[in-house]
Amino acid sequence: MKILFPVVLIALGFMSCNGLEKNELNSGFVEVDGGKIYYESKGHGDAIVLLHPGLTDLRMWKNQVNELSESRKVVCYDQRGYGKSDLPSKNYSPNADLLALLDSLRIEKADFVGICMGALHAMEFALAYPERVNTLALSGISFSNWKYSEDVIKKHIEFSSIVTEGPEKAIETIKTDPFWKQTIPSKTYKTAQKDFLDLLEENKAAFTANWQFKEQVFTTMDRISEIDKPVLVIRPGNEVDYMIEIADYLIDNIENAEQVHIKEGGHLSNMEKPKEFNKAILDFLAEHE
Image 1: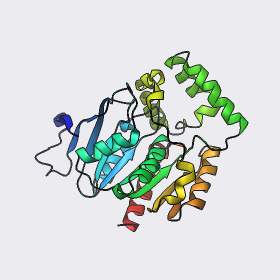
Image 2 (image 1 turned 90 degrees about the vertical axis):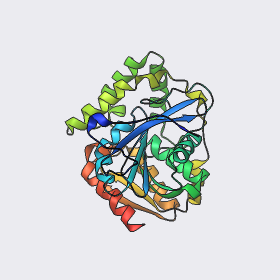
Image 3 (image 1 turned 180 degrees about the vertical axis):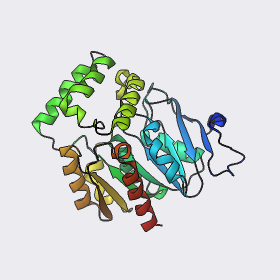
Image 4 (image 1 turned 60 degrees about the horizontal axis):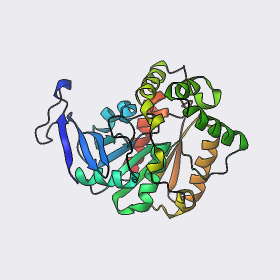
């Protein structure tokens, strides 16, 4: 694998002379099967990879990058179909994309932090490539084969139909329907809410992508007991109900799992309560150095 078009964000005042400056921010594209994915990295030391949820991109981690990069090499990337990465154009594997990124950046092993879709991908990767994983920190997890209530299933079926009416209709539904609003930052956190809604609008192409190209893994929920790495389950106080149940399931079924509660935080607690979220990550990493 090779990195395409690596660029340094000189305009932001960061230096990049063979990676010697602590505050450098590097970015570029990695060639993957059927396209390319965009990444950014900052800092030095042991690597930590941040995996974003759906309908956002790597910018949702902006409140984590600076603090975590004080002691780590932080890597964020736009998963295929989001941000600056290519939309799916053929069958692809999220695990293969992530593996290509690590290989291109010469990262043998890393810690992984994921929310929602990103958390699921982190677990899938840990099961497929355990030798590349040190620890996992997970929040807002959901499984495709979880025993959801009839109301939850109905909402997802309805939303699938709404998406066919176009991105604008889908975005409006997320903003106004109480079921979907619970997954976005609340108005209590005005900056976080605005940032998320901007990301949602800027990633509306994801609503038109052909996600049938994406490799689907349906065994993760049944295999989580095989994860033998330290796992932190982050539990926001205002998490979605069924995600609370799934967090319980992780704690009960992963031998090396521990948990931390973020009071009053919602589904995207890294955006609403970044100070608490960052502390939870740093404390966990320090414990397992």
